[in-house]
Structures are given as C-alpha cells and as structure tokens.
Length: 322
Image (cartoon, rainbow, N blue to C red):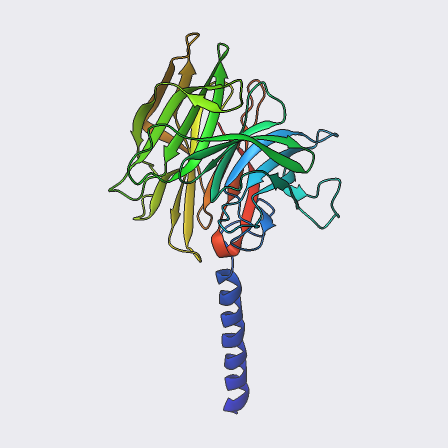
C-alpha cells in the first residue's frame, strides 16, 4: 500500500527539481511575461550599450544600434535591433525569427565596447566607448560601421573602468558625459563632463573636464556598479542605470534613476547638478542593466533598456522614464 505513495512523492520531487532548474536558468523576473525580450543567448551577445538610430518606416518601432563587450579579434562588436513596444523583431533583411542583425566593423578593432551614442546633428554618425577610455567615431551606412577616427578620453583616473557615454547638444554647443562605473561602497562612480568638438580631420576633441562622485541609491550590494550607463533627455535630465553583478551566472540586480540635470551654456560651459536624493525610476531584480537610452521627442518619457546578463545573454525592453 505504501508503494504508490512513494512513487507519487518521487514524481513530485522530480517535478519540483525540474521547476527549480528552469527557474535557475534565466533572469528571475519578467523573462516570460512579455516585458523583457531576449536578443542574445550567451556572454558574447549581451547588450552593453544602446543608441537610437531612428523609427521604423511604419512608425511602430525603433531601430537601435547595440555594442557588445567582446574582447577577442573577429567577434561581433556592433549589431542593429528593430524593437517594438513589447517585442524585438527582425530587421527587414532578416527572417521573422531573427531579432538582431550584425553590422560589419570596418577599421581599427576595439576591445571591450561598453557604450554608444548618436552624434547630434550628424545623421549616421556615432561615438562608441571602450572600457579603458578610447572613443571611436563611426559612420554607419546600412550594415557597415566605418571608423572615422579614435582618441583617448581626457583625465582618465587611476583604475577607471568605463561603461557609459552620452552626448548633449544645447545652445549650439556639444558636451560629453562619461563615468567610471565605481565598485561597491568603497568606490563611488566618478561622473566626468566636458565640452566636445570634432576636429576638421575627424578626431573628437574635449575641453575642460569636471568631475562628480555618485553613489547609487539602489542596488547597494558589495559589487554594485554605481553607473553602468548614462542617457540625457532632450530637457537635460540625467538618467543613469546602476547594476550589481555577482558573477557570470548572477544573480544580478539593477535600477534606473533620475540623478540630476545637465546644461550647456552658449559659451560651451557644462554644468552637472546631481540630486542629493536621486529618484529611483524602476528596479529590475534578476537583470544587469548596462544600457539606457532616452528616446528623443519633445516631452518624451520613453526609453529603452538593455541588459548584459553574461551567460544568460541579453534582453531589451521599453520603459517609461518619468
């Protein structure tokens, strides 16, 4: 009489073990609820940075350029995602089951790209940033990205590890922001800002640099990267992502925060004002947000987030950034 009960109990334990295994293979929140859309399946295809390229022809989605933090020669550096609210779909040149189209990198090959940003007023031009502080000015034409020039960032500090880069144009002037990501409570992020121009021969040039220390209000783990990306709205709001990384298999945790404001005067002076109590706009347990892109448009509160979840791959989602 006890044998059926033993079998039932064994079957229940096996089913429970299977469920725990499934839950443990991916992000803990949102992976299957239609909010996050998977765009990469391994550590080589995560989303380290996002740049808005433009809306789709029918206006229903956006095209985004994505950088991958690969280090070895020949591995993918740059891709394009066509993203619709609630889904990531293929570009017109890909099959319906695809979500990412690779771009050819033409020129000096970077190591560990972490951010990318469109150059205001220069259609098809972008600046991509490698972790050690080299910026690459790119021209994207169809499926090819050509390196026009590259240069080091100014004022690189001891031990700086960069994951973020943003550009803002105000009053006819251009400014750049970037940050050492920081590490836990002993090392806050260092946010840098400087006027930027592009020389006649193509090289990005930077003016006087200012610095601000920044600590993320969330997450607060020992491995927290206080700034994993930066984006600036058309109105000058400074939006940052922060992430906690416990290793290639997680667990991960993230937040997006309204951190302050940026202004650029008619003389090119850059002023960064950080809030004493930054406003957390959203938290994302189970994901490592390394890319935040505020979409352009007067009064727009829309943004796109991207994750580099290491062995679990990469995800994107739309978000309201209010």
